[in-house]
Image 1 (cartoon, helix red, strand yellow):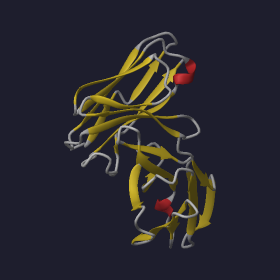
Image 2 (cartoon, helix red, strand yellow):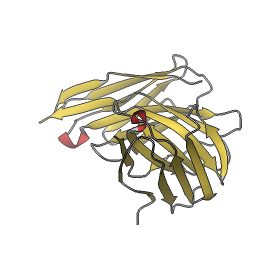
Image 3 (tube, chains in turn red, yellow):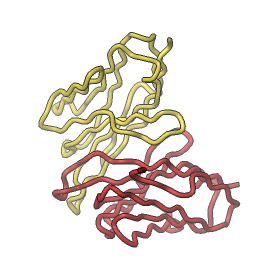
Image 4 (cartoon, one colour):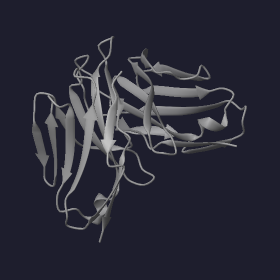
Length: 116
Length: 115
């Protein structure tokens, strides 16, 4: 069974549209993340949630809004898409127990977003 | 914030030779240093990690060393094989102001193993 899954795998859309990417993990982890990987392969954290609470919010445009309905799901909604949003978006999860203890992050398969 | 530099950006080695990738970090509070391998079109996956209370860790053909004083850590792959070809990311992790771990990734090294 897939541990961290994302949908869709590919997303092609036009500038100005609004789109969502969904992420689910079945590992029982309490922390989930969104990363952006650009064309140069740089992996940059965007957001992190712990038990549905936002704990990391990097300098990301307000057009990006994460939502965590429960600790197994973390969705990313993007408004007014721009050309520069084209990238691969990875969801990840980890178990941070006790709080502050670093553990391996498990990544989803990625969503390749292309904005035309 | 934390800054992680990684070198080289590309590395080509002959099959059977060793490969070394080096990273430096800026924040002495970082206490966890994972290495991820990303094959073409796939997700990053952890291959080895080291915590700040350990100087070296080995797992078969891969090893990681950490020098806390100099704030640098390295990945060593011995007896390289074509399936080692991938992009490798180092990372440094430390607790943020809320007490939660935040991971900062290096810029990646594209390793090519030539058969």
